[in-house]
Every structure is written in C-alpha cells, then in structure tokens.
Length: 403
Image (cartoon, rainbow, N blue to C red; front, side, top):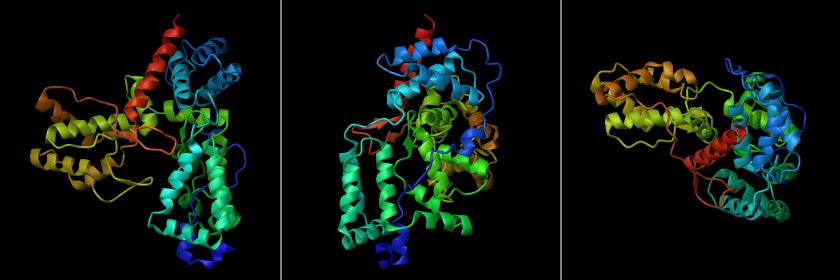
C-alpha cells in the first residue's frame, strides 16, 4: 500500500474522517430515553393537527403525513409531550435547517468543499504534509477525491468521499480492530478531524449524538460505532430523534424558547453561560467574549489553561472577598454544560454580588454572540441570526395552531 512508504507519524496524520457503516439502529438512540416534561400531557396535538402545521410550514412538501408521524414518534419515544410548544419547536427547527429534507442538498457545496480542502492542503500541520506526500506518490488518489468532492450535493456525499479516500490508503477494518483489541482511540481521533459536524434534517450536532452513544456503551467509540450513528442521523427518523433530544431533552431553566434555539446552534446552556459572562463583565468592567464557553476547550475536553472568564471570576472573588479560590472555580466551571452549574457557589455568589451592587436581578439567559463558520455557508451568519429565524417560525406555527 502507498501508506506503508511513509513515516509512521505521517500515516497517523492522514486519518481525517469517516468510514464504512451500516444502517443498524444505534443502541443509544434506540434505548436511552429522556425524562418526560412534568405535567405536560394536556393539550397534546393529534396527527391531523400536526399534519396541518407541517403542511402550512412547507406547502409543497410531498410526504407530509410521514413527517407528522415521525415528529410525534420522536417526541413520544423521547418521553416528551407532543403538545403545541414541542411540536412547533421541532417544525420551526426542521424548516429552518433543511426545509424538511432528511439529507438536504446545499447549493454550491462541491466547489466550496474543493476550495476548503485545497486551502487545508497548504497548511503546515503533519496531517496536511502526509496527505500531500501520498498525492505525490499516487496523483490518481487526489484526482478521484477532488472529483467526488466537486460532485457533492449533500453532507453525506462529502462523508462518502472521505470514506473512499481512507479506504484507498489504509484498512479501516484494521483500525477498528486496533480499537477493539488495544483501545487506542483511533475512532475518536478520526472523528475529531471530521469537518462535517452537523447533519440531517435538523442539522444535529454529531458530537451530541455520539455522546449519547458513548454513555450507553460505557466505552470509547470505534469507527464502526461512529459511522453507524452518523448514517442513522442521515435518515429522517434518526435525525428527528437525535434532534428532538438535543433541542428539548434537557432541563434548561429558560422562560423563552429562543434560548433553546440558540443552544441548539451553539451548545447546551450557551445562552445561560453567555448571560453569566455578561454579569461577570459588568462587575469587573472587563470585555469578555459572550460565547457561552466559560472554559477553553480542545475538542470535547476542557483545557487546564484558565480562560479569560475564569481569570476575571477569580479577580472579582479576590477583590470583593467572595471566597472563591482557583480550585472551587475550576471545579464549578466544569459543570458549565450541565444544569447543576446554577447550584454552584461560583454561579450563586457572582449573581448575588451583581444584585447587591446594581440592585437588579442578574439575567439568566441571553443569546450568545458567535459567528458561524462552515463550508456549507455562503455568507457570514451568527447564532443570534439563527435563533431569531427559528423563533419567528416557531411563533408563526403557534399562531396557526390557535386559529
């Protein structure tokens, strides 16, 4: 194989993403349920009512009944009430993300994918260096890859292009066996290189769906696990189920749906955390990025390097005697992706000091300020833009239900 002619470091660096998968039901998506909404069984929508709302959202949609069926199924299966708020939240998100397409086409995706890949090849990291080496040894591999990327109309087309690339330079089955026998984490490494991070009719966060799977299996995922979940998310029912849980399957504390829509785009509790960052900045007078990330992250793991938000919290504590040391603050901030962060000393003492200083209740949520970047986008967009668009669709859906 061409790969054997290169140094070991280069071989490791070449592994960018994706692999052969089956459409088998992923164990986690099939079995793990979220807690139902307390007392939310009143005012549930019938199939007829849901069918009407879907049709009004997308009048030209062919399989309206199928989408209505799967929306109601995903809510019931997730332990959530099919009431008007939940149904309309799903309809609004699906309509915004894909116009009710399970694997939505993206205009001009092929050209943008080729351009992005060419730019990446010019980088100086060892992965780009290794792949350039393979293309020099066998230029036909590059030609075939670029032809597949140029022809891509959907995210799954790009997935498949990379799967074929990996299949041409190494044995995927061997990599899966390495994880199975030695637990080397090859699957997790390859997934971290994958540029396609949201997929399907609801543009579900792949990281969120994989985290469900990781918890269910109670072990690191190998390539077979990862690709099985990815392929399931490309189906209508799979994308809806994972999207339902990502959007509605957690306790938020929000009083408005717009913050859930912002979280859907930016990550759970990003709206709450952005408000917390704003409170911290008002107390200290420092300018903080209101992005909802209280720690610095490398992939899914928090970096030991303190973030600016963390440093400012410690300065406030030392200046005003709040009794928060570095150990307590770091321990509490590690809960920023959970509801329980609101119960920590770091959250409560900062909020109480803000109220005592300004005589106002600290805001619990605000839409985070994040610029969106993706090969799928042909113009600059933000999380605020996304949240407002979905909120508008959501309110239209509710008003139509009340007529």
